[in-house]
Image (cartoon, rainbow, N blue to C red; front, top):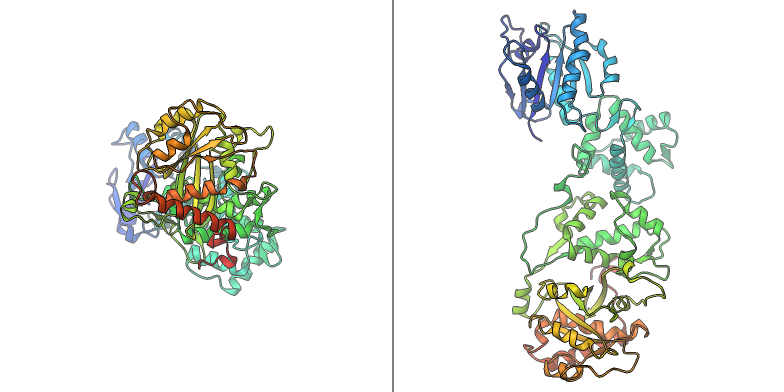
Length: 608
């Protein structure tokens, strides 16, 4: 936390300077200067362990411009008045509070402490920025240290962002933040905080368990004051919010702030940037993937919200899962990029695939959602860094001719109308329905394949034709797929012209789309099969959107093989023959035995 700057203002001779000097010397000063010098109190002697600067103002040797400048710099303003003077009291509302409001930012108010006598409490109803009123006397050394403590507390644990003095209710942002805290703490997702969950919450936030009698006392307060605050012996969300309302009303808002800050919230009640993300030092040819711990957390999250245990999330279950997030991040396009069940609901395998894709494309977004979900607040607290892993440089992988990566990307190139979208959907076992608009579908498809008995994710990315030239040299392309219309004599020429610009280090495959009809003779100097043979490419693979998607499984298996083993492909291959023998063997193996389910999907989340 930054330093706290406390400014004392008030009419002349009300005792501002005496209060400051009495705090320092612990005795009433016999001689009082017009203004005290700025005092800095070290962090180790303040209750909140924050360096504190106390600034005095005197209109005898300072101008109004200097006053305004000091108000702007201050974190909290203490307005001191003379309890024996009605005029001094009246000046609080006629001059000082309006002046402080005018110099503040438009969307926020600077906290104010009124110092004098508690009889001014009605002012708090009209000026919500007034945190408290403190009865204080420099002559009697009464409540002097308390006054500065309250001033410091008003900065570090302000009431205004949490609670509306007018409605006597939690403000919307505070209620939303506490609701997220409740949902994360509700480990079994039953809508209640059990005794064990409350104890875990107490330990996490305050490093101390909630003793048996203390727990019972809390429940008794809730039972007495709010209907529906308890259910089946557990604390409901309604009861949880009531407790924090009570803390704030009783002046213990630091309790609520401790909870909110523990769960990542800043002073603006938004999750802090340092809580949502971390900086990763990585090269341009490295990628980020989910770790074992990251996958396991997501599996647990999925299973916690799969109430009917049908291994898919209904729209209602999916909405509940994202209940700890600011917005619902997934639209219909997401469901078109991964595996779903017959109802169009995302399955566990599709769920994991989507997050694998998110991590691959934008790991900062992935980390943010893990933070929203409460990854950090597991039974054993974990850093976000444990949820991901950075892969080795692709150049090193090529040199060593092996890789430990599990996510690979294939760019799908082709002129408009050749069937790229159908090609992506077939990868997921789907066909485009009549009248289904391609604009509603994602440009990505990701699925799990087996390559040499290892599970790998293959990402297909549909590239718009007009952007093809710019993306040919993209380092994130592990394998390229060029789709042409076999019924159009001019289509192959367009694709070859583009393919010739592809770096030689990127393996590629040509796919003859719309193969359900008679193939047209291509207007090129040679036909596709000969071209592929001369360029040491696999022969063109036929694809038709009218066929069953599983009929094209070998195409996707081969693309995955090429992405994982690029050194066995193309003109610089170690052994083209050995590659295609291996690819053919793997395709046959998959066809006979079926793909092994991703290891995290095994019962109990075993990683064996």
